[in-house]
Image 1 (cartoon, rainbow, N blue to C red):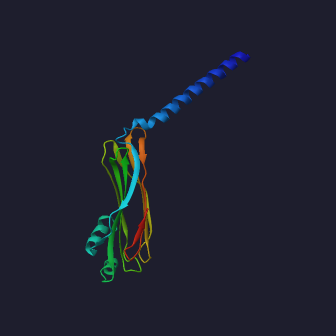
Image 2: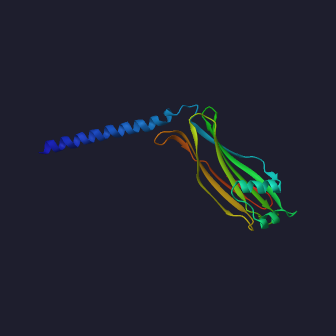
Image 3: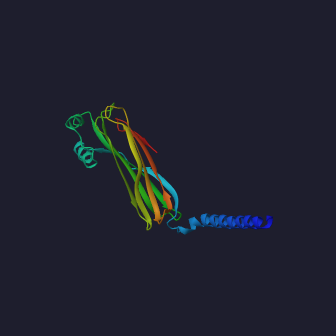
Length: 190
């Protein structure tokens, strides 16, 4: 009885080793499934220069973003001492050969009087793809804090981009943005 049990154990052990070897070979071959031209190699970050925005344009943008200003907020931002700004932070995925694959945007819009945020700040979030096979899967997480009557506004976004989605993505990227702005028009991002 010892021999049949030993044989079953040996067969299971050999089968397991074979499957483990096949899994390891598949995992190591996976990056080769994405052509070098479209394989994500680096992520670059940057910002467009801050733009001072006309107050009517700001109010119209807030309405389009689903954050329509109240009459009181419109009155507050119409004060001469209040200025409004728009600032777009972006991240771009580049391939091994320098091809731009996708771009994630995080545009913050706010008004301040130098001391306080004076209207509901809002963030526009969107993605673009530039290479075949790459898809924008949308925003995975987003949020914001502070804002009206605070001395800062902070918002964040995590986007998802996917290369050739079968049961799951062959390759994916999750660029994260975090931007803080102040009532004097200054800001920081990462």
